[in-house]
Length: 421
Image (cartoon, rainbow, N blue to C red; front, side):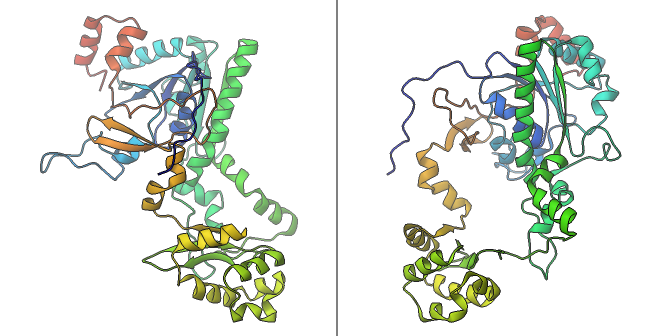
């Protein structure tokens, strides 16, 4: 059994963003992941949501089963929502169709340092909650806004979603086979890329405000973030007027280079051999079978030219072994190789468990769940804070009383009017 990774001897309980107050009106992916980076490291975060239009991810499968036959799943049993909301935060329910809800939100703005929102362009403006509107309430406020295409320009009013943005950022053109339709690299790939830029912009704005006392307006375009990852393709077209053609797993500079079937049910391994020196090492590692001595495989340029034949021969070898055995064999020889992992593989991965990648927490509707580590970085002096996902409106009364100073009578009266739906 693997030993636990060494923990820092001293943990500073004061996290980097402690004292920063964040209001989060984000849903689905980008905005939530962006705020999570700050919330895991100390911000006091209030999530604003309404049951009349809940976060769409609350409706995403898989769902934890209910205890009663025929009982509706509801809004608190989505494992998808649960796994992406482990950042410490509170949740208040506010139905913005009610004027009183808007007034409560404005009081939160006066309290906050940052307001983050991920609605389609124009939604906040119609409510008078654009940056100019927020500045009237809190002149030092930082407003972060994220949407598919940015908040100005001819495409600003188009709603953006990760599955569409992978297409419009050209990512779908890179994945797939030349004789088949394009395949997206992932349904929501841009959702994973955007938050890294977005969270950095909020940190920069906080630093700017610390030095100058002035707030900032951040207009985050998810399509622009995605295009940063495909700039070689854009440059190639600008300079050479050349469009990328889908090539499956083939490479311009390496062969063998691909995914190869292994022993077992739907088991595969990735192998990449770059140089002629690596080829000789690869040949030796797999026992120097006769086909490796063919002259057409001696030089990298020829191996690339005849990569189709070479792939079939390599797979004729890999099918005799489980992927884990090939991975270990080739890695020990210094050749790039890795098991094409399944969910079961990742769940049992010794490296992930060594680094405490999984955290087990109790959920009131779903019981014990194993959540993955929220941040890809570990700070030596600060432990990442995690909590089980908030329920919709779970902290409404606490926020109203403890942060806004409202009486219980006021809270009860507003609840009766449907303000906290």
